[in-house]
Each structure stands twice: as C-alpha cells, then as structure tokens.
Length: 126
Image (cartoon, rainbow, N blue to C red):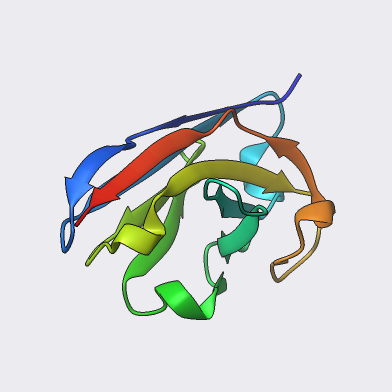
C-alpha cells in the first residue's frame, strides 16, 4: 500500500521561505516521477511542479518558476519542494503525488497521478 506523507507547511510572511517534504512508502520510489499540486480556498487543484524518476527533468507552472525548486532523494524515498519569495497567492493546501510508471519525463496532469498525500497547509501572510 502506497503512502505519501507531507510535512513542512505552516505560516510565513510574504517573501519568506518554506521547504515541504513528502516521504513515500509502499513501492519502489525511484521508479516513479513525483509531483506537487496545490489547492487554494474556493479554487480547483492546480499543478505546481514535477520531477522525473532520476531527478534530471523538472517541470514548473509559470507562477512559481524561479521561486520554487523541486528535488528528490531516492535513497530517502523523499521528494522536496523548496519555496522561496513566497506570496499571499501561494496560500493553499499543498499535495504530494506519485505519478504512474514512465521511463522518462514528467506530467502536469493530475489525472496521471496514482497516489496522493493528505496535504499540508501553507499560509502566506501579507
């Protein structure tokens, strides 16, 4: 049974930083690309970032490019999201997700992801 457990959310001021972590278990972590999505109050869930199996390929939504960095440590079965220069519009519940198996690349489509964490709340105050 696959489990994804996020941590690292919290309250931060505009311009601050947070690092989210997502610990995975249940199947061979290095086989699967990973992604981060977020859902703000009253809005649909949206793609934030994704990383390929080997970490060589990353993908970001335009609004976070240059501010957020996704990374992974396959030895620790963990994916990270470093968030810098945070803005109030980044306030959301952030979800870690595990993609289906693919030989290379990433996906920004939530429907491609097989497993989801419970989410961690990030609140950016102005």
